[in-house]
Image (cartoon, rainbow, N blue to C red):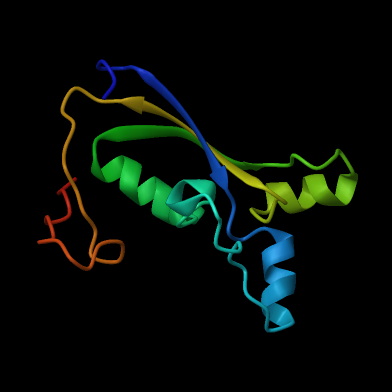
Length: 121
């Protein structure tokens, strides 16, 4: 929970990164191996750009920037892929909190909860 107009900077792995697309083309899994450290040893779910935006806006954040961040080097083709949304590693979202936070559990993410209606704009 942030104060009204507080700034949020969120980074998360990009499920649409080129390596994952290549794995899918070869009919391989995009998921990390199960960790011996339990549920805290890996990401349990990677959110797409659209999902992050929907989740943050629905709970009362104003998105100020959403992009991919290339973290594996500054080669021109990787920078181009990052601009197209297929950066190798991370999504970066900058957002500002609004005065009225809301609760929202989208049905595409939760299957065992009563679903809150999507907030009206």
